[in-house]
Image (cartoon, rainbow, N blue to C red; front, side):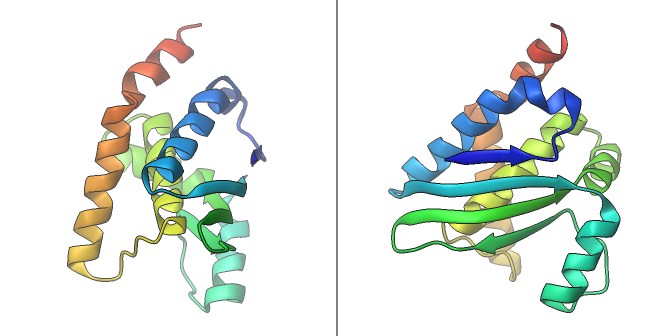
Length: 147
């Protein structure tokens, strides 16, 4: 089960695609989908969580809580809308493309990927790009925004 909470109005039209992407990542990694909650919050809420849970006093775009058991993917992805907006401007992509990148990023963490070293970060980015391209995210986002 995949739940998306704290939704931005525009994301509602993209819920189905979001769930398809997450499920495909899980399947591709030979795992099963358990309970996955995607919670969209503001910068201040995520900063508070970053300080309280990780002892990091800085803004971040995502915090992933991993509750996986064996091959069952369970967890929570807390995502900051404010960071997504800023990152989209910084990287010259749409809000929704950046949001999907972060959702993919968090799901990959739940499937076992790390991003602490340069090599791990490179692999993570390759996988993010793979899924953005596989689902032609930019095309789907444009099509849904046009409705």
